[in-house]
Image (cartoon, helix red, strand yellow):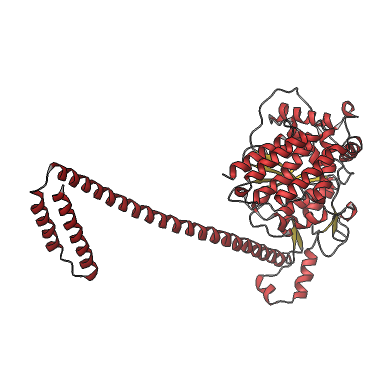
Length: 510
């Protein structure tokens, strides 16, 4: 095979010279091709069978190398275009957000202009008159046109002019327990609404109502997040108010409304109307903030997050309007409204690219239920709704805290678990979580659950939820150790929700 290797050496030497001429600009393709042909003709006459085999193998390898280089170039070009497309998509999303904000500002300006037109029409003035006339005259005319500033709230006053609504328990439910209420609601949802919830989900929801005023229902779309409070409202015979959150919401005016200086009217929202109507009723009022994380919750809901932290419920007051008038709605005192204790705020949240992340500030103040699948169908007897006074339900919660205090043994084990989490993950339970724990656990037990099930739920939703922001890729061994610690403290058949969450986190770390 000496002839082949001699030929190969000549070809490689010629190839090097060809590349040099290519870069120097002296390459003559016709002359070079003649040289390659001459070399082949000269040496091929001396090729043995082995030389021809090596020649064919070399040609195949050369073709394969060229194909690989072409494919690599195509891949790099595609990747460059893909990155460019992603950048363009990001720019488009930013542009869409900017246009949404501009649209929002334009709509607000449109409302002002419409208000100016209405004020001018009612006062017998044209737009030119408004632009060039005296502001004193305009105000006088608007006052003449005048009338109440709160049309929707005044409608609520009219609705309850004969007295407040008083819910009364039916005779067959005069001494109903929290556990029986949960069972009755589950049967009602199944028999009348064809909605199927597990006993654990119902207990968690009612225990959450006994723990705080803000409940978050999150998970994938179509799992019944909005249906749960809607069904609950039907069960209480007081339909839940569904308020759809918009991506443009940036402050409390989107939630409560705002005063229009041109029309001298207050633009009221469904949320404000629902809160105000609850002051005329003694039953349970559920207000749903649907898709609550389409906008930043800590922006538009900030005032309520702060108010509901106050231990004295008489201080749960929101400022609706700066100045008061004699014809303002009945339950507005000096432009302020006291948030009644028969209200619960229910937020639904989808976790996808179209929504904002719910911050710890919000999570820490709420009880969160996660929906990851549809309920399994079951049979239940036909069950009637239950008009339930809020005071009765709140009384059951207070009684539960007395009847089912957390055992010292469980508290000691939970303190050990707290120390373990601090040591290995640098996370602490915090005073707010412990306060919620002391309310949630007794209410959950009174609803028919067990103490460890309640601890498991709180540990998963309050502590393990925070692990999602950690770099779990470096915490695989620590997570396995946490699983072992749960077994050591509570047994292998307890804390099943937390164990499932730990398994998910371990998978994320791979």
